[in-house]
Image (cartoon, rainbow, N blue to C red):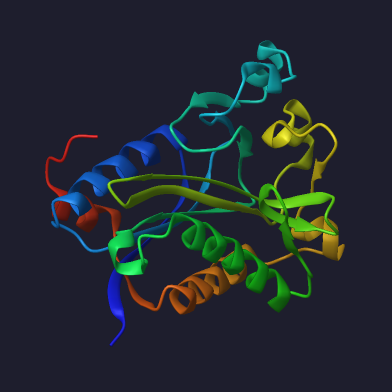
Length: 232
């Protein structure tokens, strides 16, 4: 029998609020007050700096970022500097790896496989790149970034797939600190518009298959009710 978990799809949300919610869900999961929970959403424009990140990887003037409405957040995920914005689907699994072999490497590879298989369904051939987390097209253009954290075998953060974000905004950073590579999107690869919700639905289907979990959609209000007054 498949494990059961919750699916939260809150739409377009501000990064810090969702980071706070992730932390609260993570705490509730540690005390077994909630099932594994997977979040799929978009973020308002922002730049996040991971644990290996440096401010030098943000190359745009701060005034320009303010004019563009792009906020900067330091966070506790792995990885370097990443851009998030509308037109990009982010997947945040908050799950207990005791149920998945306590294997962080396999967990990260499964998240990449979710992206690779989703892209294949939409006619884009993508793959891993040895030594570089995320998913790549032709080994040169990064279409999905990955940055995770695991504490006490409970996960946070995840992967972000570029569907049709503003690619101009990626010029404000050195994506993942890699000067020699560039970011791309599904729209760029296919040369046509892509239905974001259709991609999200496929990502959910792939996640459910790869992790052998049945996800029940739940509202944010219900999640908050379940986790109670859990502190971030």
